[in-house]
Length: 140
Image (cartoon, rainbow, N blue to C red; front, side, top):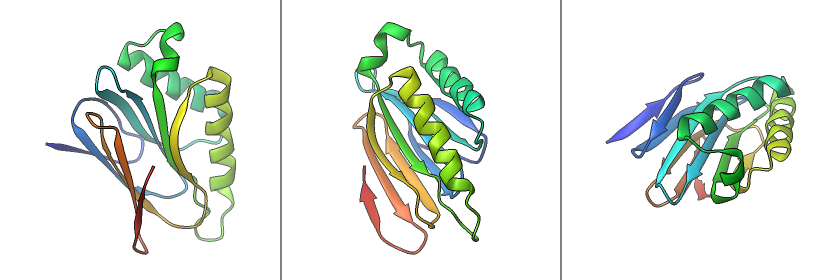
């Protein structure tokens, strides 16, 4: 089974996920490789405190305590500057700053540019594939 996430949706579990139409917003996946599950969202905000609040919400949904952060891996995709807007850069910076503040280890990212993406993630294997609207893909 594959779960599909849309903008502003959040999900926690062991099923494969697909986050489509990730452009200016950000796909944030927090993966627990030991439990083989993840918490994910397709989120949009350039307010760092709101981003940090959303990340803490994902961590709480996973049941992870502050001292267990080193076992996690964060995957990020999005933050594109589409349609001539420079919003993606601001949002990417807010997400990266919040992750640094929380001292979460990043396991892969595909940020910036001007292309809409689809993110596919398998929490059992940790495989994260980014597919671009203009064609092509890469694993992070």
